[in-house]
Image 1 (spheres, rainbow, N blue to C red):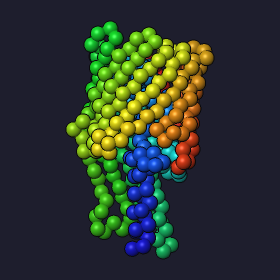
Image 2: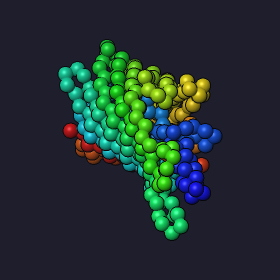
Image 3: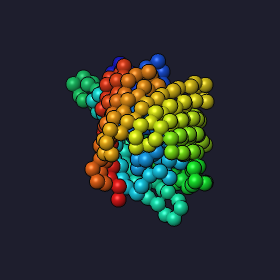
Image 4: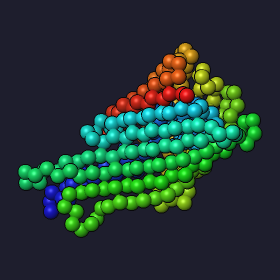
Length: 283
């Protein structure tokens, strides 16, 4: 009983790490190394590939056809990883993307000499599209399904199991040469609450730009903010710095050669510093 309670407690801590924003801000950040290098301010970040579906579906009008991969070992905690793959394409005037995300943790419990494996995993599958309303304004919609699985050894009481959810995301993006603005609503029709994001970009993409973003969670009546700066020192090399919603420092690099692009981000965090890597190929 004591071992089981200990394992349950550890799993609950992992859930807090990924799903809430408490005093140490254990939040779910976007699956984009580029946005993470900017403190998480990705709702008004043009370019990229299908990973923008998780940031703001309206940004799909700024993407090209291609594939993107993302990986991180969250907070440097063993067996606590997040990975995703996304595709983007275009048919006529409609820009499309699909995305599969997986994150979770494995915890091993030593119970009287026997090793038991406890697991927590999240799977998210999304598909979305965007279209231009006029020369400067685009509208996007994302449809998501989520399944959370928690498996604890000797869970005789059935306290843990599977949890499924369906939700939608809507976004607007206004784009000018040296100014951009976005509004996003996340979690519509879902079970985990709705939140809104308002973001502003100052500066020219591909050169130097500053981004700021505010996030309001209705269920918690809480507002979070993050910001970052991206500077392209050459046509294929960028540096990024930012401050996340925990007030901690983030940094990143972006490199490209031909159709390939690689993004790296580093994040200082009270729970453990983390490295993020993304790689994309434009068809």
